Amino acid sequence: MADKEPQQPEELPIVLVHRLPSFKIPSDPSFRDQLRSQFHMLDPHESPEPYDSFLARHAPFIRVLMTIGPSPISAEFLERLPVLELIVATSAGLNHIDLPACWSRGIVVTNASLAFAEDVADCAVGLLIDVLRRISAADRFVRGRLWPVKENYPLGFKLGGKRVGIVGLGSIGSEVAKRLLAFGCTIAYTSRNKKQSVSFPFYANVRDLAANSDVLVLCCALTKETYHMINKDVMVALGKDGVIINVGRGSLINEKELVQCLVGGDMGGAGLDVYENEPNVPKELFGLDNVVLSPHCAVMTPESFEA
Image (cartoon, rainbow, N blue to C red; front, side, top):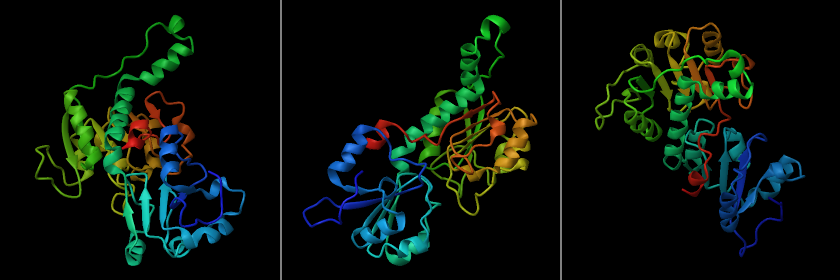
């Protein structure tokens, strides 16, 4: 997205793209074309100009900011955008945004939880099936030409009948539940509050949920209360055959303790789309066939960007 001089009245509205260098605007052509047809997208990371001078030059004209990925938006950063009115987060979580600072300025903050709910739920179920049936590991087994040598590949596990505990029964968690019910799973959940509109068993804390589940699917937001809520105590309660799927935020899990449990055989497996220190992933996970890893791409479908 080429840089240009601040907008004139007849030009498209300016939108500042706020992201970490490792997070790109989704490459789907239709999504990019749709954005460019309606807005002039300013991405500091695509300009040769130093970031600070780029931002200072355009700040008087930026009323809308689109944040991609977990790039922090602090009160100090907001002070550099004096006329900002709207922040659009292309994610469900808002933990990277200083919401009180936004509210004090009257800045509206929106997220994309409803637009992405079905796609994230699909990814969660896909990760779960992959972990249980070891599909990715089986693919490596065949591509590595091990089939003629070792013949029988280790058995996987059936999804139907599994007790699935959903952590966060919001828009994404509800879509996960709907899909897993069709597979014959039983559903329970924990959330900030018991939901009167659903009949699934409710657990007031995640440890009790884990003790009564075969699988935990993490769909909740990252807050001070949910930071590292999945610790060794919860993993032990889940059991040696237990599986954790995380499509929420990486820091919901104590990643160090997760690695220890997986390497030590204290858990059955994990499917992870998010990590504590993205894009860095613990190297200990790379050699584990009971772990499936994806690069924070649960929302990444052409259909979701058209929503």
